[in-house]
Image (tube, rainbow, N blue to C red; front, top):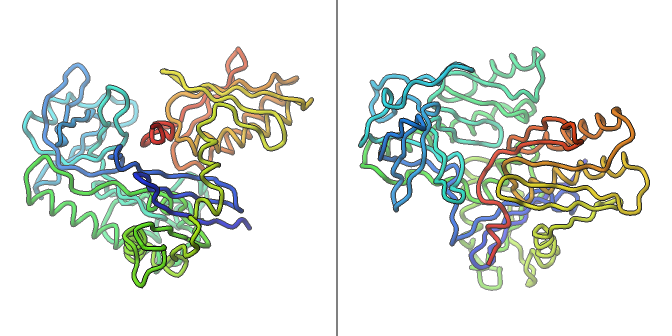
Amino acid sequence: MSRLELLVDRDGPLTRAAVLTDGRLTDLHIDHAGRPSLLGAIILGRVERIATGLNGAFIDLGNGLSGLLPAADVRRPVLEDDSPHFRPPRPGARPAPIGALLRTGQSVLVQVKADATGSKGPSLTMDITLPGRFLVHAPLGRDIAVSKRLGSGPERAALARRIEELATGAGWIVRAGAAQMPDDLLAAESEALHLQWRAIRDDARAGSAPRLLHPGPDAPTRALIEQGASAPAAILVDDPAAPGRITVGDGPLLSALRDWCGRHAPDLLPRLSPHKDPQHLFDLRDLDGAIAELLDVRVPLPLGGSLVIERTEALTVVDVNAGERGNPLDVNLDAAAEIARQLRLRNVGGIVVVDFVNMRSRGDAERVLAALSQAVESDPVQTQVYGMSKLGLVELTRARRGTPLAALLRP
């Protein structure tokens, strides 16, 4: 079984959380103090302008920032107990006109589902979700939805019934890893998430808009949430605020993570510890070099050949080079796993086009497509492989989440 570790440090304005699988970097989360992300933040906003042409509303989020709330993402308000329910439109149905749902000056509780990019502001939804390692609380819903990764057998229905009995409150999305977790851990997580929601809702009802009610999860927390049931065997925190990184008490970085684990992941507390070596943790594990390589255009493949990854205004292009290896199928299968890893580590979003090495048969092409689809399956960010075009190019999309790595690390 693979060994997972989570290494956390603060380097100037950067807070970094790196997941290592058997010593190799497989996931990376970074916060930049000067370029803060709003992803996942819950904000009491105010309707600034109804945009009939876009069938959406621009929401004042405070601090001179506004975001777009599409009509399809409008849900029932939560600022009064007797507010009507705004159901999402049925699949394929057109949402109601935005003017029938919201009015200028109205206070609305929204969540940022994508950060601002270029000239576009944040993308918003009223479909609030609070993610946990095994469960996601969707408090404005009433149903229990089970991950499709668990298949379609009777296990899905049995797990849904189990969560219905264990969970506090209504509206839950059950992640695949929940099936293997004990009842007490699932019940504790559901209670923590529900209490978190009640505090947010009560705060929204008590004050004026616009204002931030709940920030999105920080880098270390995101790393733990996205690992789900694959809990790290060790969580090491290099906290430079602690002199010599050896203190009687916790530094602020370690203290915050210990507090979050105490409320949301008590099983991880024994695995959490400060880094006590005088040499910085990321230096000791040679992670600075590995992160710097993620900004390179060319990526060597483990068994030979290389990838060339280039970002354009409209999409990301990945070119697979065979190098000196003679078998196109072997090169492409090697490339498929590395492409999935690079997209995740670099936080690439939007359209991605891959030019694999030309293959001899349709069967080989199908094997490569299957390998790529399997490689992106574990990505917590929704990634869809659409197939191969007539020109032999593979098309896929990866949802935009947060700020791309290159933008976070630019000078």
